[in-house]
Amino acid sequence: MSDPRKKNGFARALLGTATAVTAAAVTGGMAGDADSTWYRRLRKPRWQPPGWAFGVVWPVLYATIAYAGARALAASDDRPGVTRALAVNLALNTAWTPLFFRAHAPRLAMADLLALNASNAVLVSRCLRADRGAGLTLLPYAGWTLFATALNGWIAARNPGD
Image 1 (cartoon, rainbow, N blue to C red):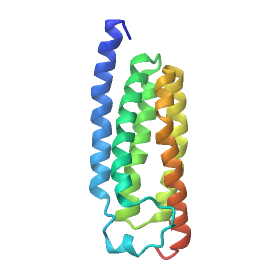
Image 2 (spheres, rainbow, N blue to C red; image 1 turned 180 degrees about the vertical axis):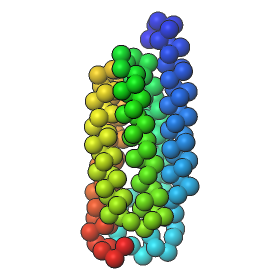
Image 3 (cartoon, one colour; image 1 turned 60 degrees about the vertical axis):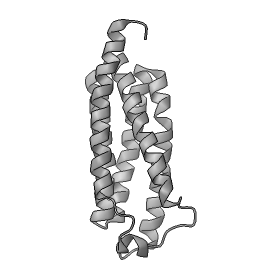
Image 4 (cartoon, helix red, strand yellow; image 1 turned 90 degrees about the horizontal axis):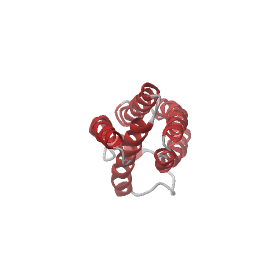
């Protein structure tokens, strides 16, 4: 990125993606309540990470989404396509927490996660085309989302009344 115009484009893109990702993270974070009676009563798998792990993993993943999105936007010939892919992805990401924790709807949250996984494939693909490093940076996020899907699926299947 030695071209000053690209550096400037990256800085502007990073400001935009960081703002969008922060809004998604804050909105989702406000909707979650892992200490609720409802959540504590759910049957959960032994392989579920401890609660603190989510607080460590998600900020890192959100930072990578902002960074990768900015790199892809700065390098892309299809900025509107990358922007749409990122916006849809963040909307689906943000929707999961209120669906699961507020609506107490693990099955509906599962549908959201399935859509989010499809959205991840689109986002990673668009970012790879624009900037290989940006696309590769998103792979841990896509992997964690697949793990979250397995976890949500396990919970939904074993808590039929919820």
